[in-house]
Length: 257
Image (cartoon, rainbow, N blue to C red; front, side, top):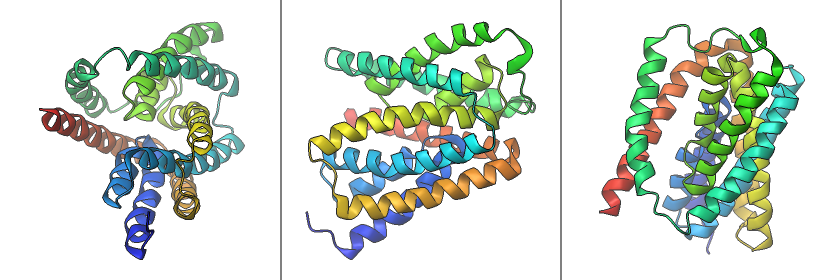
C-alpha cells in the first residue's frame, strides 16, 4: 500500500500513546489497532504491524522492570509458557465456536472489575505474594494463565489487563509487581505472533520500524512513571483501560447485528 505522510501521522502518535498505556495497565492494542485501521491497512497487516510494533516496546519495558527487581521470573515464565498453550487452544476453538457469548460475559465482568477496584482503596497497594508457600502461587498461576491464554487466542482484547487482575487478586502482588510480571507473559505471546506474521509477509517494515520506535518510547516513559509513582498511577489508568475495553466489546456487539 501507499505509505503517505498521513499514515505516519495517524499511526505513530497512537502507537506511542498505546505503548505508554500498555506499560502502565495493559490494553495498548485498544488504541493502536484502531489507528492502524484508520490508516487504511488491510486486516492482516493491521494485526501484523500492531504485534511487531508492540513487541519491541513490551521488551523494553520488561527489561526495565526486570532491572528494578520487580519481576518474579520463575512464576512469570511458568505463566508465559502455560498462557502460550492456552492461546493455541483458544485459537483452535475460535474455528469451532462463535465468540459472541464471551462478549456478553465481558459486558458483566468488566463493570464488576471496575466497581471492585474503585470501591477497594487498598487494591493493589500491598505486595502479599510471599505470605503463603510459593507452590500455592504456582498452582494458582498455571490454570489462571491457561484460561487467560485461551481468552487471548479465542478473543484477545485486554489480555494484559486481565493478567494484571489475576496477579493482584489471585496471587496477591501489588499493582506495580503485577504489571511487571504480566509483561513477561505478553512478551512471550507477542514474539510468537510476530514470528508468524513476519514469515507470512504481513508486516510493512517501512511503517513497522518507525512504529516500533514510537512504541519503545511510549513503553520506556510509561515504565519509568510506574517505577516512580507506583499504584497511584496504575490505578486510574487501569480503570480507564477497562472502560475502553468495555466500549470496544459493546461496539463489536452492536456492529455485529
